Image (cartoon, rainbow, N blue to C red):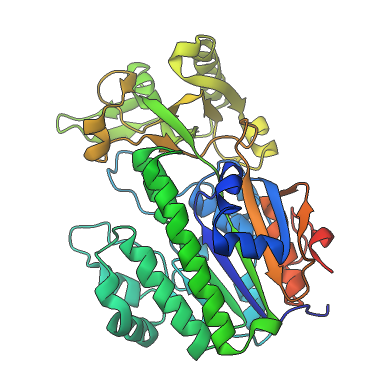
Length: 433
């Protein structure tokens, strides 16, 4: 397959939504990208629409049930800070960056989810020090490009304040811009999280979220400038994309309190999970209910119980999906069932207190709960994301009516002359000249 570009830069603006389009059209750098390229304002995300499954779908072209990243975090009942799907080995099948390496192309990735210890030339992985005995810098160094990350920290580390935003994205930006000019990777993956953070803790349409969009426009401008300075503009294609949208909420639903009442979840005197037959794994706007053992009778009992709960809209459950229904939507077929939250609600894994918590500013300030979430079904109204492609091989000032997130991987592979094999997604020929 013949490549249509030599250099491909994927800029993921986490939580960029279709309803941001009116703002993007007024921001100089996003507007320029749309005018010189092709935009799809209606990209259907995946289920559950969480960051790690979404970003894996982007680089594989597959739904979660196929690539294996079915949530952000592992199923670890009762852990207050469960481990995330940080590492490349969790992904089943190939990825865009794997195929690029096989083809002899140079690769770079900055905080792209599920890449830790991946075979990437210039690599700053997204992996958190989530244990008291861990320190962020060595955790990052030993899971990515050791000496390269040392250099980036030496050059730009003063911009960081731990994982705080917008400082983290500013550090990532400077590292990425430097790498474009100094290393000229054929494939670069960059994950910015400023907007997602602001929406979680301030709301979807908050002033803080709008400020993050303006900062992202400035970041996009600096990437475009780096491409021009590098002399690679005519051979480069830029993708500005989102992974999911978000919805405001004010109540947290805690299905594990129900499972505890049913005798399916046991908690010891210290408040820790001591045993479980069933457990609710939160995906924020949706949730999996897992059974510890394969038991069709328990599955039926759980299904009946939660379907009764869902009949009362005040209980926060919009829909209960069977194992088969969840699998058909691309979610984890190993879950006994799946719950979809009603508007204004999201799911928590807490098993203490009342079934529903009403969220207060104090809860948000302490990071116990948030004001906005994602993870919801792509069937939710006004819940699409966006993709803008501009540069070598891409049609100018064009609108693509609709596509799916899983179509992005095959489309990006086509740009570089790569092949991801048989995928759930398809190449979107409408982007190309």
